[in-house]
Image (cartoon, rainbow, N blue to C red; front, side):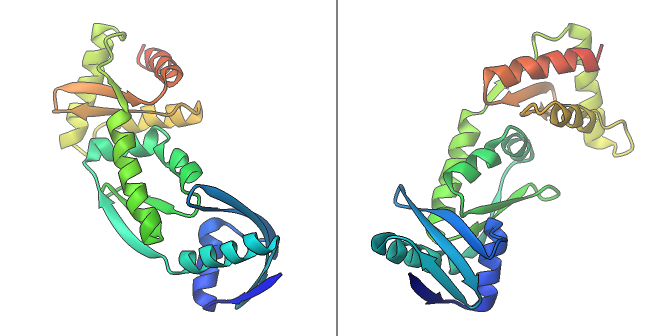
Amino acid sequence: MLEAHFDETKLADLRKRNNWKAKDKYVTLKSSGENIKVLLRWIPPIVQIIGSVENVENARQILVNLTHAESQVMSLKERIFRAVVETGCLEEMKQIYPHLSITPEYDSHQLKLFGTQEDISAGKMQIYQFAQNIEEDVLKKLGKHQRQYLLMQLQHESTNTNSINIRALVQAKFQEKKIKASISLKNNDEVVLSYFHENEHKNAISTLETLIS
């Protein structure tokens, strides 16, 4: 066992960021692709780290790095922001970078990243990679009238805040059915469906057909 002393405020922030609520918590810490499993016992401002000698020392260093976290903002175009948030990219990011906190700022179309400099830099690159790999479909499988209706509504929404928010209705239905997909207006003359996996595409098309029939 090793006892490590931390700044109490930074320690509280670290626990909140990682949802480590229990006083005793088995955790898996990631470092250079290696998974380190230890038991953390919180006695603020002390953390007792319990595990093998090698794991305990590595875990202490990881926790030190994590408490020296910083915040950065990543700005994206509105359509890309929506696609990244609504197609499941952030859930994938949590699996890859479990200690990196990413908060979507919907009004400004920004992602607020909080973590170590190393995780933030790598996380930004990964988000850009995800954005490049998102598939886009111009909804040719929908009927002509359905596409025209969607296009007309989205165009109207872009200039009139009092119009029916068809995009919000569609996204709410996607969320209800746990479909990770996003519809948006592209170049103001085309409706696109963004998705990562083919099964999400099929489910989204089926939902749109039912919703706009």
